[in-house]
Amino acid sequence: MVFYMLSFTAELENLTNLQPRGGCDDPNYPYYFKVKCENCGEVSQKETCVTMSESVPLPNGKGTVNLVQKCKLCGREGSIQMIPGHGQPLTHELSQHELNTRLMVLDCRGFEPVDFSFGDGWKAESTSGTPFEVDLSGGEFADYDEKGECPVGVTNLRAMFTVVKKQKRWCGTAFV
Image (cartoon, rainbow, N blue to C red):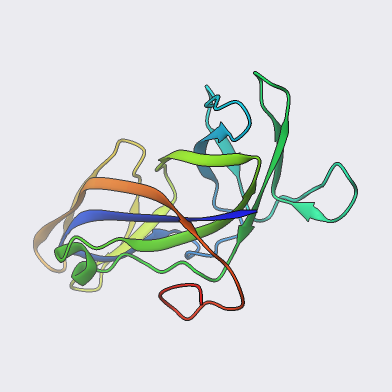
């Protein structure tokens, strides 16, 4: 079993706390990404959609996961289980320092997640406190904050998956 941390960063202009609309652990937020088969190396042509609120039984009947899928090339099955409780919003300060923030941890068996796709269903607030619904499906966002009398925006959006080891507990910045 391999655990992958999905993290992201962006340049935030007069915005802070960028995250999925229902928060980082929103059970209904759809995560879209391509997967790579660990057996044959085939990368899926279409993006896979995974949400925490959906669960399916494992083929061997021992538990449930959020996704079971077969590789279209070699036919081997893989599964993905989302592990909540590790995400945090991207703040203005993290953005200014070009630091990534954690979004989700995935327990992947048979697949490696690649190429996360940002979509609609995000939220942020301006530095003056005005809430904004943010659509990142175009790769960026721009609007105007009437209260703060300034432009707001999200640009240079980047996501990455990194391997993390889960042993006993999460200490807030890493698995220990």
